[in-house]
Length: 231
Image: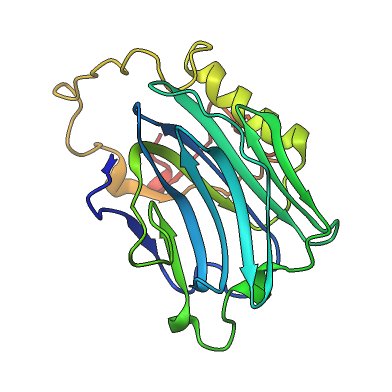
């Protein structure tokens, strides 16, 4: 939880090195009257990709690259409830798109920049990858709760964003992130060490494929190989 007092998250300066496409998704709970930066990736105020939320101005994304500026139109964000946000920079189609709860919220066309132009490639130390604050040191930091913030190196489609949103909502019984807390599971009866762990030789690799936003279907059991043919 970020309370607008300067608290924020800063990712490694190398996080986006070598990427030209970025998609960012996450869940946000915005209190009444709150605002701030959802994320801000770049080298400074004149070279960045960012998104911000405001109970008055709404949710929008934008970019700055030297003299070039652009952004999406704002969309109102419900307050005091969990909402799913997504921002997609798609340089191949020259689009910057925002989504709210899996649905299209705003879109800027003719965007002539990519992530590699906004993120310093030869000196990663010049990059500032912020979540919850902007590149402007005087700007306000985010007052909101964040969960499950994800960065993708591909331009997510509208269908993929909707799938990510619906998959997370389904896990919460259709209530998004605002459902009841998970039950507490006691581990008191679980032994600290498995009696067979010391005799385990190896476990074979498995492969699984899935669409973005959906967990893969894993096998129920994987046959392990034990030393001395232990069961």
